[in-house]
Length: 227
Ligand SMILES: Nc1ncnc2c1ncn2[C@@H]1O[C@H](COP(=O)(O)OP(=O)(O)OP(=O)(O)O)[C@@H](O)[C@H]1O
View 1 (cartoon, rainbow, N blue to C red):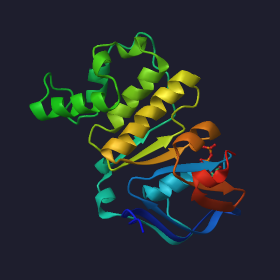
View 2: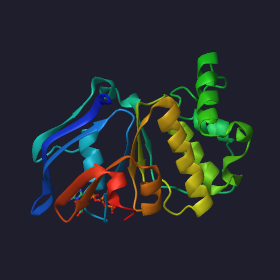
View 3: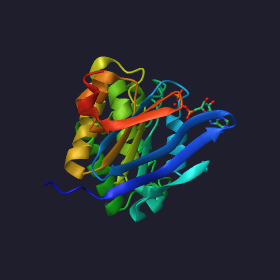
């Protein structure tokens, strides 16, 4: 029998409503370390609210959501939002953009440790050869991988990706997701992937939670049957 990985996030009897709008009721779920967990559902069904509950930015109507101790430190949670294009005149190089995440990035030099963190984040996102590239002139996939590199600079345990590939072309989408897969497999980073893209969910996901008009389903993405 295979051993289960440690629980990172645990929901018990979690219920959320805004006024008369019931998003989900009695949600029981465990997200385990190393999972590639997909959060699915049409617009307005509760995906962002679920993330806000996880981050403690909303209070559940009922029940609870508990995080493992390592996630109590906010720097252990990375977040990549939807792709935002960057103006072609944006002057920073990819490596300087990634280093912006460092709290003291305004000083003119980085410590050896900080340089090491930037180098590692660039390596993990396949951007080493592009580190001097001006971000504004990079491709869409490279820009989104630069956001990803920023999000993983502090080597978070959990990485939340909020529709990270919406508005990217097919090649760029797969570039980004292959990078995320590497992080998941080699660094053991747990992934929560919000997406409407069934091809990506079927190819990369391990487990899922789907919201649908106040109802939810959970399971292994393999059981979605290529939906
Ligand atoms: N603070 C709030 N007060 C009242 N209603 C809210 C609040 N936050 C969200 N809602 C409502 O709850 C529902 C779920 O919103 P949520 O943003 O979680 O959906 P979503 O699944 O993330 O949608 P999308 O895919 O469009 O991002 C929506 O009808 C939204 O208008």
